[in-house]
Structures are given as C-alpha cells and as structure tokens.
Image 1 (cartoon, helix red, strand yellow):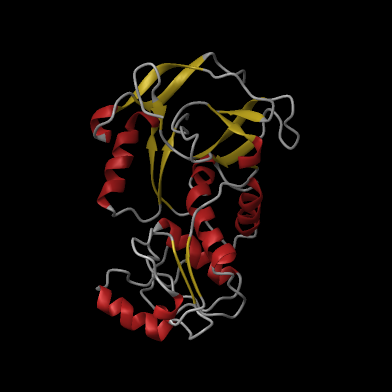
Image 2 (image 1 turned 120 degrees about the vertical axis):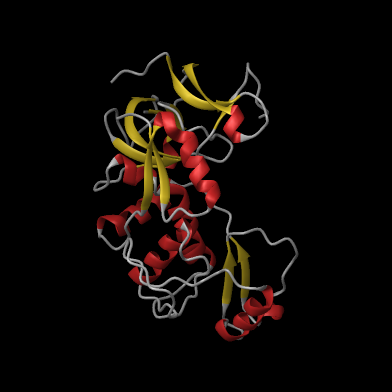
Length: 278
C-alpha cells in the first residue's frame, strides 16, 4: 500500500461545539515524513486546522530512513504525543518511539488499548508502585481506565475489595465511585494504611493535598507519558490473556460523531472505537 498525497480526516477549522465544528475533510495533504517517523493508515483555522484523537491501530505504509524496529506492512498500534494528536483520519504520521506491535489483536481491539491502558499501567506501577499481595481499591472501576486497572491488579496478584460484580472483560469487582465527599473521607481513613498507603488519582487535584491528611505515604497525580516500551509491557499482559480490551461499540468512520455523542452520555461500558477503513 503506497502512501497517498491526500486522505480523509476529521478536523476542526474553528472553535465551537464538536457536533457543529468537527467535520470530515476529504483532501487533507500528506506531511513530509521525518527520519524517525512512520506513516500510519495550535489554534484551528481553515488554513491550519487541527485533528482529533490520540489512539490508533493500522498498517505501516511508509517509514523514515532512520526507523529501525518496524517496517512497511507491519500491523501496529500507537499513541501520539499530546502535542501531535490527529489519529481520527485515514492516515497519520507518528514517531517510531510511540509505536509497537500487538500480535493477537485485531485493529478494533488494538485501537482501543493505548491511552486508557497506559493511564492505568503507569498509575498502578509507576506512581503507586504496587507490589504483589497488596490490596488496592479502584474508584471508578467501570470506566475504561478502571477496567484496565482492575485487570492489571488481578494479573499481578493484588487483592481487590468486594464490590459490584460484572461479567465483561474478566472484570469481577467494581467499586461505586458515586459517593459524597464525606463518605470518601471516611472511606479513606479505613482504606489507606497509615504511613504506608498510597493514593493515586488520574483526575486533577484542584487544591494541594498533604499526605498527612490522608495518613498516607504518597499522594500522586497520573500524567500519562506516551511510550512504546510501556505499550510493549501492556502487550505482554494481553498476549498472555491476563488483560483483555473491552469495547462498547464500533462505529464506521462516517458515524464518528455518534461515538462522541455516546461518550458524552457517560454510559459506555468499555471503549468506543471508530473503524476508519473496512
């Protein structure tokens, strides 16, 4: 498959509601490939629009001269750096350092993995530094990030408090995160072990929180760092069938706005995937 001169992509040309301003552009020009970049299947204006999307999976159709690990024809998945989004398109360019090869996933499954799995993985292992046999309480376990966090916890031998049982993606325990602040304060005193407990959040903390207020050893916010190495570690869990992608719905490219409408309902159980090419 040769790289085209133009392709279709969803782009913004001006600020405004997604439903109004996010549109398919049919003749997006191809950018010149950098030496370490792969070609995979700022304020917006008509002259400089910006795209949308961080996750992707597809087949490599062109590589830069310094690309070493991958070749044309490889099936891969990737996450873009947050300064270079735009994966909701037929083709896009990405640095090799953000790309790896999944061996046992189809493209829909692979595209659903990178951002949420990296968020859960880095939060669990890089920030919380969880060890086998420890007990972890996952708030928001029915979210896409929460589903991966639960599966990672089970895969490496963490204990999960009892909760609501669910039957998708190997997830057996959800914790209801729809609680009042007072309930969480009381729960925190019970859950976090004094002096050794760790509290990690993927949500921004609007006010500084001192470890002493929780009786915990560590308070940490997760800031995801796109990484092919971390994706490769996640791939090992998936290939061992210890972690499974969970997809709610797959939408055709032309119906991508329906996916965003579903996302805004906050009722999706798993990832929403846009299939760019059948």
